[in-house]
Every structure is written in C-alpha cells, then in structure tokens.
Amino acid sequence: MSNNNTGANLGFEDKLWMAADKLCGTMDSAEYKHVVLGLIFLKYISDSFLEKYEALQAEEFADPEDRDEYLTDNVFWVPTEARWHFLQGKAKTRKALGNTRKPPRFVNQKRFLDFSGQPQIVEQRNQVEIKSESDAVYVDAENTLYFKDVAKIKLFVPGIEILHRKATQEEVDDFLGRDFITLESYEAASVCVLNRKRIADIGKKIHNLTSEKMIHLIDYAKEQSGIELTEDGTFKISYEIDLKNLLFAMDQRYYYADVYEENRVANSVRIVS
Image (cartoon, rainbow, N blue to C red):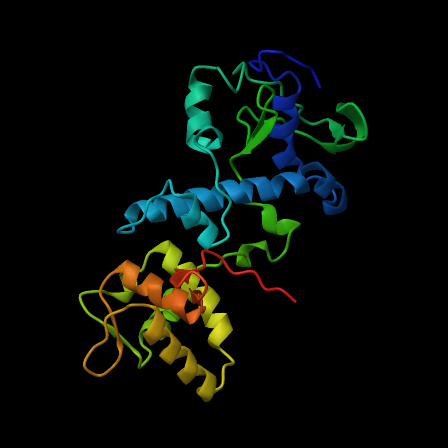
C-alpha cells in the first residue's frame, strides 16, 4: 500500500476497501473471509457503541460519556475521535479520508483482488466493480480502519446477529407482565434499547429456573435493588431506571463488601470456572 506521512491520501486503500463489499457476491466465502472477516468485528463494536450511546442519551439519570455505562453491557468504549460521525465530519474537510476522487470501475472484465502479497488486480477471476463510495476507510495517520456498512455480515459469520440481541416486543410484554411486576405510568412499548437487551439476556437465564430458585431470586431483588414495592409486594416500575435496577438485581449484580461495609453493584458479569 502507498504511504503518506500526513495521512491525507489513502493511495490504494480506498480502492481496496471499497471493493470488499462487491466481492461478497462474486467470490467464494472461504476466500472472502480472508479479506474482511477481521474487519467485521470492528464495525460491530462501532455500531454497538453508537446504539448504546443514543440509548443512554434518552435514559434518565444516565451519562452517555460514562465508560462504566458501557462496561455494564460489555460494550466497548469508543473515544470521540474514533466515532463514525466524527470521522465523517473530518471527511468533509478532507483531513482524514483524503482525496474524494471517484475511483475507476472495472466492468465486464473477469478480475479479482489478490491479497496474498501487495494488493493487485489479477485477470481470470470474477468481475470486480469498485464503487464510488467506500464502506470502509483506513486512516494512515491513526493506523485505524473505520467501517460503515455491515449488512452482509451474516453471509459468512452465521449467528452474529444474536450477540447482545434485543428482546422482541412479545418478550418485553411477557417479562413485564409477570406477577411480581407492576407498571405505573410506564408502558412496555416505551422500553429503551438497553433494557430490551437486558430483558433478552435475563430471559435466557431465568427460563429454566425452578420455582424455588425463582422465589429466592425475587426475594434477593427485593432486598438489594432498592426499588419501591407496591402494597401487594410487587416491584413498582415507573421509570427506565427502575427496570434497569430490577434487571441488575435479577442478574444478581448487587453484593455487600463486608470488609469495607459497602453495598455495591457490578457493572459487568464474567463467569469464572
């Protein structure tokens, strides 16, 4: 790849990454994965961060710039300078993305991109058409790849869509309709994205619990969550923070540090053997 000390011109990189998306439909997936598989997860990190950031903006008492909020749901923290919207802003001034000259198109020619050494176009394989807009760019000055479109990820990474899956409306209705929950001035349809993900996670955990363990878990939540109870002893859910605290409690994230005599909540859960 060409090198530029200022990081303003990408040389071959812009053509290289713009071609990656087109290659998906023109070559065997076993070959294609070597081109972009390592890039997919970086795009997933970017999308996950943005989704949570926007949800935190809408969530009462939440700070979208608080790293701990992201650790809570195992979402990578992305610095301001690495966020996609920031990069787009720099692109408009050509400070990061470099020359916006439209690259050439290879039409009706059987060629493919060879990544075994120096990237080059080689005859005798499937047609490659290089688009005028890139789905991924490499910023030389930052040694960082940024990604925009991951719509075709499931073609060669089956099952990735279930990572941090959001609960469906039916699953949300089912959870909030349980007999230990009472909604007051709060509707199931208004549950934020973060709590939908937490409902999906906790739903899998409590699905096979025995009645005895479920009762024990609810008692634990009543003791630890700090959520107001109704006269009937059910959890009173009026705000997103109430639901968040309940879901944390049902994940048993609250604990007492006896040496320091402090009640604490774990931001994330990691199972150890």
